[in-house]
Length: 375
Image (cartoon, rainbow, N blue to C red; front, side):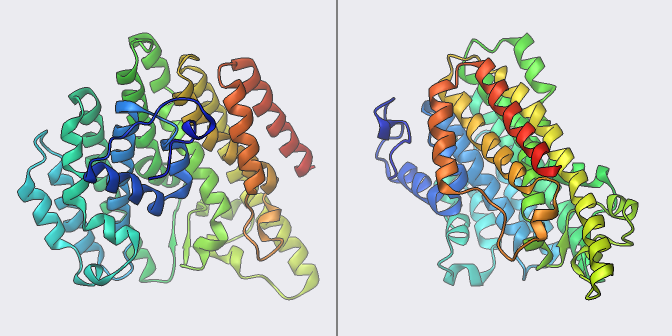
């Protein structure tokens, strides 16, 4: 098992014991997400366990939704069976078995960690029963809600792809999609953070709940911007058509049909950067909310703050690199921060996590540097 990040630098204590099921959960996390494993493993105790399990359950749902060979109608059924597991606190074994039986036969021969996790649903689901209800109930609720949302978008995506591309019509459609895949995670975090400390009372929790969906959207919209070219290779574009039309594109996928004529290309590049610039601005708006959300976490809760600060500062650094959006298309290489930048973020936030002033100043500096790159 990977040791806790802070334990490795002499701070804190080990969290999970050596039982086989927890050991599997911890090890499979490292295989299905290196990025989220980093900040999940900064947590400890019941908060660590509940967020670890929530992430694995949502990864199972996401694996079903992403399968390229399953029809949307099948995905709807399989996601419904997965959601059924979480409708009661006893997480019935027969519901788990029914879900596992519904998974494609080809997955049983796969060595991919996503499929491996799905086929070990019977290992990771019962672990939730070890947690107090104040932690377990929000995890069950978010899993059910995400399954419903993913089934809805799988049906919509299949219908759209039959005519060529999956696109989103409006910013409202984008917000709805991001809500189901990330915004509801923000809601989950508010409930779990409040369960984990008496320092988050009703009033503070209510303030956090005004911002928590935006916290989830900050990371998701930043990823959509960063991954737009990669998504286009799957004939998927999450950039709303209404934004594209404002800048002279009849459809979002026209942004990937680059003209050969030099004069036409210069105009095309300018319009395409303007489209992406609107999404970049949207990402920064959600990041503003996410930073405000993080500052509502009591500053004695070091690990909880770091759990939020690490991905937020990484997303902000990525947005700084992207600038006005034109750099996304400037080379074949994906725009992303270096490992050295990640190390710098971890080190600086670990030293200053308690200081709202430092968080505000450091974030404002990044945002200001991004503006400089744009101009």
